Length: 540
Image 1 (cartoon, rainbow, N blue to C red):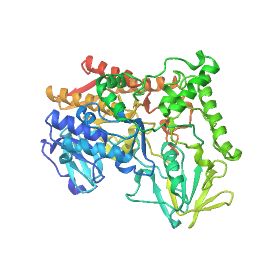
Image 2 (image 1 turned 60 degrees about the horizontal axis):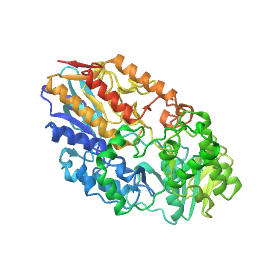
Image 3 (image 1 turned 45 degrees about the vertical axis):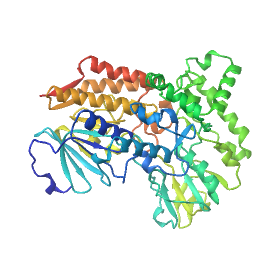
Image 4 (image 1 turned 180 degrees about the horizontal axis):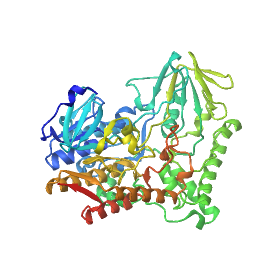
């Protein structure tokens, strides 16, 4: 940081609020704070335009696996009335078009400085203001700092030996170059999570040869991405209010009623019938939560779902050796995956599968990837679908300091904390959209919920003339304990998953989500309001 930029400022801030990010969260925060509260807002994003995650993740096959009618803002009724989509799920260009339309209609870009990365933010106790630095050697002050950094945007690229010697392209799905076309090339994909599944399905169609480097076999159900008729889309519009009431009061907020029937309460024949019905309907979250109520909490129910998918793999994949490699052994308790004809991909002549748990990647070479067995796979391009340093990764990569010069890295050294998924003790006037220990749900409804609560908390602070607002340490500690106890009631902590940090070497495996659902979370937020924000400290 350039010390010359840290000159003393007066107590009058340059802005009332700085917003970081131009995805769903940042855009809505600018609208709420600027347009509804009349605050002076400066927003930043390091991309060239709006979109957030959907700006960077333009890899082939990129698709939302939330159904089109509820992967959008509920406050923007005009946007839904005029909306047109083709299929049950939105592609990346369609989501990006939607966010551009929102930015146009609400004139949000005029508050943004694009191509600008926030590198540091320090709370100045002498002025009670945030000092925010960018990579353009700028420093501004603001009373409030609101971050919409995204759960899944700090890319994770494993440091394999020899990467700098490879003569072809190395691309992370989370930073896909615009216009990059790998048709007709020998392509390797490292990683088989949600993004990996999507890019593998897409690349199999266009690559001369596709080699998949798989560490962990995955449970993947069909997505069921059929065209939606004008009549069906109109039905969503006609039932707008009821749909959003259901979404916001549900658990996973994906626009369907979660099952209340335990798998263990019905016969094996009935379980099979229900699994088959939802398999044919499609949708990863539907298969986990619409089938039965106990798949994520009961071992026997989880085994029943897992074994159903394993039988499907055995039926679909023609080569017994390949089918064996694709057979998961972990719990079916990770982020639910879905894709059109994923297992069928491995029946193609131009696709091969390498089990890199059995034969790990030794290093990259000039011509491709060398496995420990000595086998070299020659490639023209290597795609990292290796995911993200999720939840807290974007925060720990910023020089972020609160009271008494405490850094976020020190505060979260034993795992991220976070109060209600939106605040952090010792960081006054600091609000996170999708911060640690928020709900594990469809994201737009959660983002709206959090931005509205943040906006209201700021309005209360302003109305009462307070200088600062922050959570009481004991309230934050109790919240994290609540999140941990709820997670421990499920099977999710027992699976190796990014949800608990298992995808990053050295990252502490700990709770990062509130897993009781969006409806319960909204009740928790309302309880804080109803109790006159007693869990928060205000400084006059």
